[in-house]
Amino acid sequence: MSAPAPMDGSADLAWLDDALSTGDVGRYGPARSRAFEEVESDRGGEVVRHLLARAVDPSPNVRLTVLTFLADLCPQADRWPAVADVAVVALGDPDDRVRRAAAWLFVVAASADEAIGVLFGSSDPVVRTALAEALCLQVLQRDDHGDRWVDMIERMRRDELSAVRFLGACAALLTADPSEWPMLDAAVRADLAPAAEALAGMGGRTSWRAGERWAIVLRRRDREQDAYALVAPLVWPGESESVRRAGLEIAAEAMRTWRAAPAWLAPVLSDVFMEPASAVRTAAVGVVCASLTATRLAADQLTRMLVEPDLLATVATALGCVGDHRAVPELLRLLLDGDPHPRLADALATVAAASPDPTSLVATARQVLAEHRGPCHEGQHWHSCPALVAVRCLAALGPAAVDAVPDLAARLADAIERGCLAEGRLAVFALGAIGAAATSAVPLLRRFTASDDAAADRAVRAMLTITGDRRVADDYLDARPEKLRRCGIAPDLFDWLTQHGGLTDRQVRQLNHLFTQTGWMQARAATAYWRYHGPPSAPALLSALPQYLDDDGYA
Image 1 (spheres, rainbow, N blue to C red):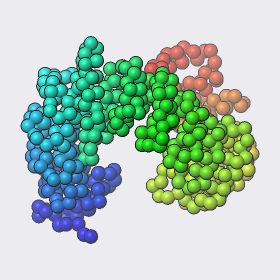
Image 2 (cartoon, one colour):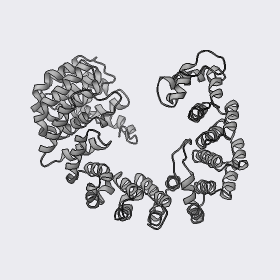
Image 3 (cartoon, one colour):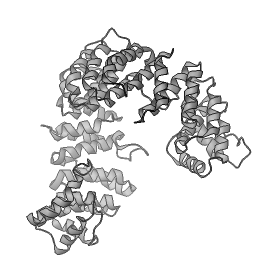
Image 4 (cartoon, one colour):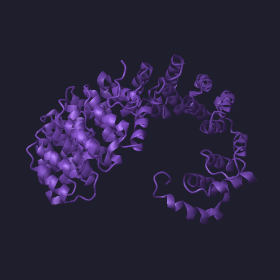
């Protein structure tokens, strides 16, 4: 089907019509990038005029795409009156999704006062709920709540629409005095069920459900004990499904936020496991399985669920990620199925690292490599490629995976021939983890060093581990300039060499210069610098390193 002709008589914009029809303009890619560039260069140009014209397209999907994309463009301008006018018209669209998108667009394209006026002037519950969601997001993102926002929140709390009242009470909790919390919590709870049905509808710009919004407020005010206390009554079997889900959403946010949450909440959620199969029970299992600590605490109950097909993948991978070997048979079956769960690679790697008997793991991984000799599908993440998940498992087994060296070497050779560096790097990592028993793969590793710098780094590291020959490191460093600035593997090589015969004069100068490079290189080179120079280097280290102690990336 060909794209419609440009609706404003402008130059050929078929590429834009195609992107709108397919939705590509809403996904990262060439079409979206081109549209952004065109709009940035001229906010009143032909591309913008064409987008505004397509906002009344006969197709509701196209109308939705246009309004959503215009909202993506709006943060680059304080106000955009022409877009706001289009959004106002779309607030009367027959499609609920389009009206929600129009409401969100209006909030970012118009002034706050205009948006608040429409919120309290409209009679459409879909529009009003979406406007309230968008405006409350702005409140959440502001540290300073001026009179305008305080007045709006107070009016929302008295609104006739339960979803708007709910959002108003949540917004009020952001700044309320602790003495007001019980009253506001009661207001949130009173409107929780109807709000849960109305919020996060299609077309909006957040997926926050009612429980998630309440949980965010609890987190922002650091109300840890209050969050724990809310979960049990909300997930009580006598409550509606929407309320119980809200309780699970609070539990999930608590586990992501507070260290003690799994110990407090895992027993509460484990009670839900005893119920008959339901969407709530499945969600409760998902919340527990998303936390390593909660999974350990509920491991015995979760193990009994390995026989339930709907829960098997979630439960088995969660147990695997905490090293529970009772899940190994199911993990191997999942790997053989050919459609790996996103956590399967981590689960297999964890159980493999401490496996008392790796025989079945090695055999299954080799079988998968034999059955998936070709490349992974284009654009496929390695976590979803059975062959690469198998390679990750073999890497975690280390020397115990020696029987798989021919399979890994074949995988690496194929990756080199196809120029697929990502697949090759993982095979290199696995061969290096196996160690001296992978000597037969060294010629292939030497070939891989010619691919690119990142490939060379991994291959050199693997060859050094396999051969223990310092000439591998010497040759690599000899090919690098004396005044090194950035070299990912150099700090590790210097550290290894100081413990295996010491550094050459040139390597000392390389190390010294690398330590002067503020940031990641300096922090990583510090160990080798200390090993080589010893106590006389203490003043330099104590002068340089404290600046990194409060940086999670370096500390």
